[in-house]
Image (tube, rainbow, N blue to C red; front, side):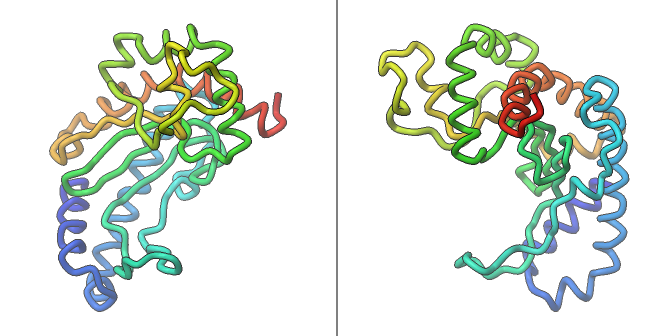
Length: 223
């Protein structure tokens, strides 16, 4: 199924217009349904080590293929990837979760908290600062680091206000996202055991998400 998804997305990239998409809508519908089924399988298997996603519906985790053109200079109408964010609350959740992204030449598995609102970002920074040894221990753990070697996202040029400029782990606090990704070749998702390997990768994300989600739940008033 994923080989067909990647091929469809390659063709969509070359023909990103409504006429082509409508002519190939039946193919898209079949592939989209297959991807939903794969995401549901992933959710069910992730729930075995992270009960927080148990009962999550794949349809609530899926991102639309239709682009929001209102404020974009790029007027191509369709995204050229299939993606889902698996976290309690679905795709719009502020909790740390698990992300799958199929895009020709840029497939990835990812997790953590992406683009937190300012108040939550401030809380995450403070809790990381207050528990820096625990946080560093998680992201420097060899199993985690092998799966997710580098933290991604936008980084401030200067230390946020209120933190010492010479803080040993200043680069961590300068991040505006607390997320890690691992880029995978397209072929990774075409093997018979890709889901087994994806689940193994996502399991390495659990301690990181647990650390972040304690703060997120406090932000959401759940603690």
